[in-house]
Length: 358
Ligand SMILES: *Cc1c(COP(=O)(O)O)cnc(C)c1O
Image 1: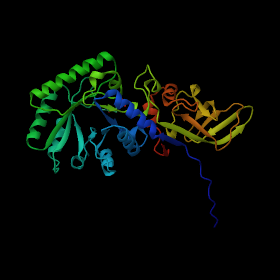
Image 2: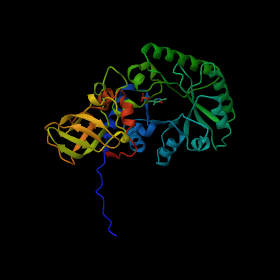
Image 3: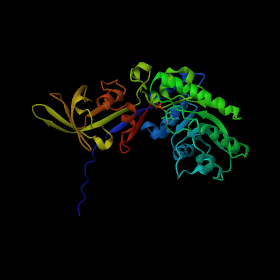
Image 4: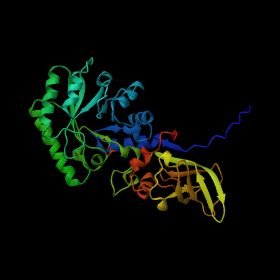
């Protein structure tokens, strides 16, 4: 029997520049001082890779981390991360005890979560951040539920089962007026809780948007997500205009070249890798120093028109990046594809290797 080695297909790559992440985190942290940075590394650090990003962020001045669910916090703990980690997305199968005993701080928005903590049998009190809804209607106690939640937490605190560390909320970023109203609502809820006897070491409200443009919303720390990856949270400015550097460069190899009246080039990346299928007619891809019109996106490849330009199999195309080699940013690509940069980078499939530089 003869075994013939298939030629390995060249892979697309997401090159992540850790120096860009460090730059962004340092830049944002300086902007909000004396408030500090809680770096949001949810969704595998917006597709950039949980551990390398957490490490880079902490090196650059972030003092705590935010994940969605306890298991992501445990991954960080097992890797030796010792800073505060906040997790707030809990479900029926949440392992509360594991979270509490790993000192994962818990965002709490409902009484059932406190009940689960009380029943967890952990060897130490749970550190909780009580979350009030200030208009977003997403994962926070309503103002009607808030007094009950606070009083229940205080009762468990007296029993030594929880330690109340913070009150927090999340802004909708819909309009300045909405955010101002939510800020007032948040302040009200804090005062109300304090009247019941709650004592908060920390208050936090802002994500990237309010963290940058609404100084009065910064409180103890800002939960920076998208800005730390180099993108603007605003429609009216780019990341570059805010002094940020996009950290991810998405590259794909040229796998076929068809020379006819015009050169059609196939790239080894497609929608199964997270490339959007919307806005193809508007989209161009950077290849050998020029922009090439995108013609089609298939499951694991895409076709571009290289015109009369010279292209060879093995050349590398850039779909998006920091913009330093003539390529567009993920913000621009997202405009073409009618989405946002957050989705462009987080959507890069897990099968695309992340390669770290700097
Ligand atoms: C994702 C998230 C953040 C970070 O938001 P960005 O807009 O990406 O900065 C902060 N807080 C909460 C609760 C989040 O879910």
